[in-house]
Image 1 (cartoon, one colour):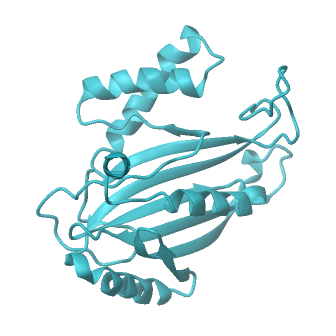
Image 2: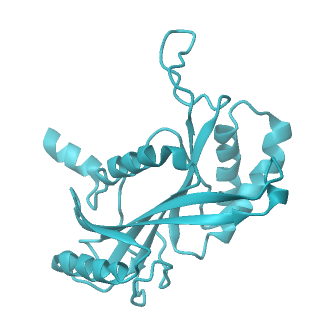
Length: 242
């Protein structure tokens, strides 16, 4: 996982002297991971797969110009400390079924709720037994901003701190379909999870302008956070089978 000594969260961070230890988590169906990679060749290869998955009903006329665009986006993100980034697209059509009678999972033609999701690691200079102390410090810093809704979380992997922020943006009439002045409400959930395996903190961020589905996105992120692990789950399965 890549790391950075800078964070936009308002939480002070230490200078990184090494790469953070590994972290595992599961993302649900509907997330499309951006082609983050260390080299241009890897980004180009992953971008080809990304656009084919994202635009599964497209063709080469769409995929060919889209792949370099997303490879460029991934390159811009390379030095930000973000190790995982994905677009979330979820159907807003209720009760639809496929021809075989099963529930349609991600049919987007009738409307979609969208979100952006990232995971980054920042150095926070703690020993393994100090995760509670680090989380308490993060909570104190975030609670100092009256625009933050900061809360303590007890996750299966250890202590964490969440921060919820809502923002309203005024839109020019030229950007509105009806030509009238309007505004856009957005929401962001950011969860700080101190590593028990090294002096870093993972930052999970979900951002959306699909506020009609805010509750569903909150539930989705909570479910994802419950899968976070600092031990290889495959090793646990192997140990249990032996």
